[in-house]
Image (cartoon, rainbow, N blue to C red; front, side, top):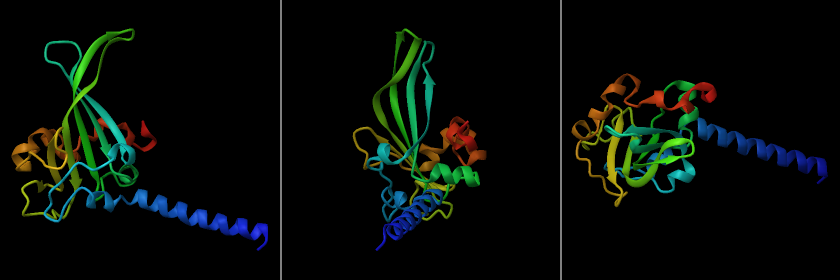
Length: 192
């Protein structure tokens, strides 16, 4: 085989592999859901999400009556979810969102009064599901699977019903499919 022919074959293989990777990322990652949801619709915190998911953004919950934040929330989306959202304006079925909830610690630093994430309190996990595939499970509805997990147990939710345990916090975001998308600049085309 001539060097130019070998180079051409290698280039063609690289282009096909690259195209497949882009297609997988833009269409959402159904395997992300499979690793988080069992056949009865029970959710769990996905393994290694910090390494494989994309950071959406952070929230700081103000301390009542004092300077700083009482909680810091870090939010991640499964692979391909951001690209799909930018393309369609919505999260595709199978999208997994993970919110880490930390207690906040505040201190005076050279830049001013600064809050940062301290101790992990737990996770909130949501899985997009327009078909409501797990109708018998009270943690599924309104297009999502919903569950809270205490920091000590990422495998077992303490939520019992999404309507009483989860939906109240998301009511102001009803018009944006229950997600506070305004807090995630990465979802905007161009990222800003």
